[in-house]
Length: 56
Image 1 (tube, rainbow, N blue to C red):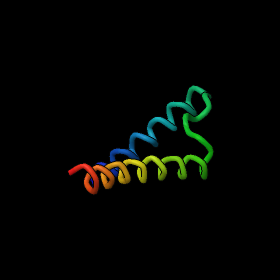
Image 2 (image 1 turned 180 degrees about the vertical axis):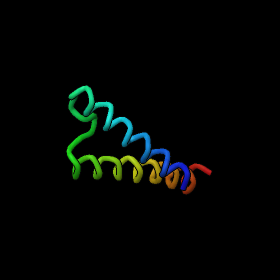
Image 3 (image 1 turned 45 degrees about the horizontal axis):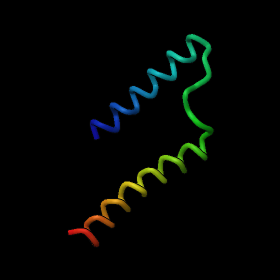
């Protein structure tokens, strides 16, 4: 839970700093960004599953 709160606080801080300097936010569009993050997570889990099933 602490990791989630730290990530949220860091994200808010970065958003405020970028807005302060009138820079574009360093994030992809909302839906594609969420799908991309989900894909990375599923890929990592898939790799672990493949290694455990076939190479141990």
